[in-house]
Length: 64
Image (cartoon, rainbow, N blue to C red; front, side, top):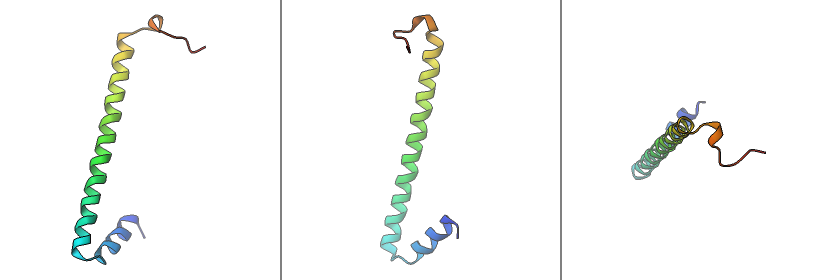
């Protein structure tokens, strides 16, 4: 059984109030995932900007 099907089956067994609570939790998880993806996108954009702004001779420290 697929995960989505299992979740659907189990949620159907809950009373309406708990179904609504489960829905709120799913919405929270979706918002959290969006925030993570946006944070990752900003990190990549920042790294790209820094790479464009500074060359290898501008390094403050060595990797050695």
